Image: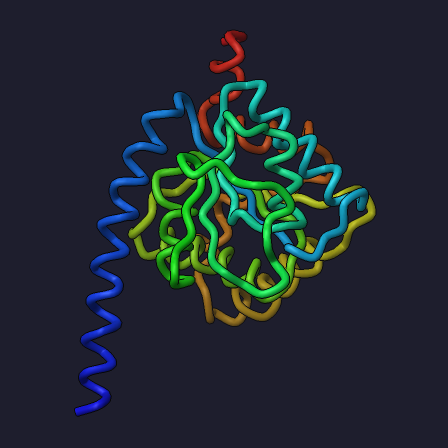
Length: 225
C-alpha cells in the first residue's frame, strides 16, 4: 500500500508540473520568432576552455541568424551558449543538481526548473530545428541517445544533429568509430540511427552542417537564398 501511495503522489506531482510547463512553454514560445537550436554539453567545461569559447561563438552566430538557443540552464557549455546568444535569444530548462547552478540569474519567462530528467529532456528536444552536441559526460550521452532513439522510432522528427568539438578533439571521431564497428557492423543497430549526424571542428563547419540537411535554412534566414 505504501508503494501505491508513493506512486499516486508522484503521478499527482507530475500532473501539476505538466500544467506549469504547458503554460511556460506557451509564453516562452510567444517571445521568440524563427528557429530553435538546442545545445548539449558538459556542465564541467571551464570558462576559457576551447570548447567553452566555441560554444559561446556558436551561440552568438546562431542568434545573429535569428535562431533561439535552448540549453539545460546549467554552467559549462550551457552557460557558454547562453553567453553567446544573449538573454533575448536563449531559453533554459533546468533541473536542480548540486554543483551545477547557473552562473547568471535566468529570466523566469525564458527559464524553467523541472523535477525530472525525463521531462527536462522532452522540453529540450521538443519542436526544435537543430541539435548541437559538445563533449560531455554521462548526462550528455544520455541526452544524445534519447534523441537518436526517439528519431529512429519515429517519435521525433529527424533534425540535423551536429557533434561539435575544437580542432584536435578526438571524442566524436572515436565515438562514431565505436558505433560503426561495434553496433552497425554487428547488426545490433541500424545505420539509419546515425544517418542525420554530422561532425564539425569549427563554428563555420557546425553552421554549414545545419544548413545542408535543413534545406539551406541558415542561408534563407540570412536572406542569401
